[in-house]
Length: 246
Ligand SMILES: Nc1ncnc2c1ncn2[C@@H]1O[C@H](COP(=O)(O)OP(=O)(O)OP(=O)(O)O)[C@@H](O)[C@H]1O
Ligand SMILES: [Mg+2]
Image (cartoon, rainbow, N blue to C red):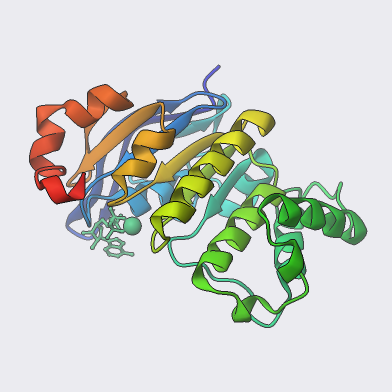
C-alpha cells in the first residue's frame, strides 16, 4: 500500500489556482524532493497534505484512509510530521521543552506522558547534535541550530511521513551535506518517508532524493527518478535554465 496518494488535488485562493490538479504517490520510506520556482505551489501542496488547507477538488489518502478534510491535529498522530519554512519555536521555552512538545503532539492517543516525552526529546536532541544546547532558550539559538531543533521536534513525533519545507535554506554548503547525510540515515533507520522542499539547493536534491517532483504554476511538470527529472528539458527550461543555480 502507498503511504500517501494525492488524487487530482486543486487548491485555489480566490481566482488564483495555487495547486492545479496534482496527483502523486509516495511510498513508505521513500525520499522525494519537491522543487519549483517561487510561487509554484510547493508550500501550499504541503499544507494540503498536512491539513492546514483543504483542497477544493481531489482527495488526499494516507495509508488507505481518506484524510482530505481531517484537521492537522488529527493528521499528526497518524504519522504526518512537518518542519516549517520559517521555524516558529516557543522562544522562551528550552530546546528540550520545544522538542518534547513534538513528542506529545505526535502521539495524541495519550500513550506518551510528560516524562516519556522528555526522554524522547533527549534522544532526538542528541541525534541532531544539539545536546549541549538542550537547556538553552530556543530563542537564543543560531538559525542553523533552530533548523536542527525544528527537525528534532518533527522527528520526536515519530512520523511515517516527514514534510520538510525549506529545511536547509540559509545553511552553509558544508552543513547541508552533513544534514542531508543525517536525514537520509534517519529516514532509513526509522523507515520514514521524506518529502523535502529544497528550493534553490539542487545539490541537496541530487544528494538525497530518489525521486523529484517539479511543480510549475501549481501543476506537476515532472515526476521521475532524480537524474531523469533533472535532465528533463522541461525542467531545464523552467527551473534550471541558469547554470549558476545547478
Ligand atoms: N494564504 C494564501 N492566500 C492567498 N494566496 C496564497 C496563499 N498562500 C499562497 N498563495 C499564493 O499561491 C501561490 C503558490 O504559493 P506557495 O507559497 O505555495 O508557493 P511556493 O512554491 O511555496 O513558493 P516559495 O518558493 O516562494 O516558497 C502563489 O501565487 C502565492 O502567492
Ligand atoms: Mg514555499
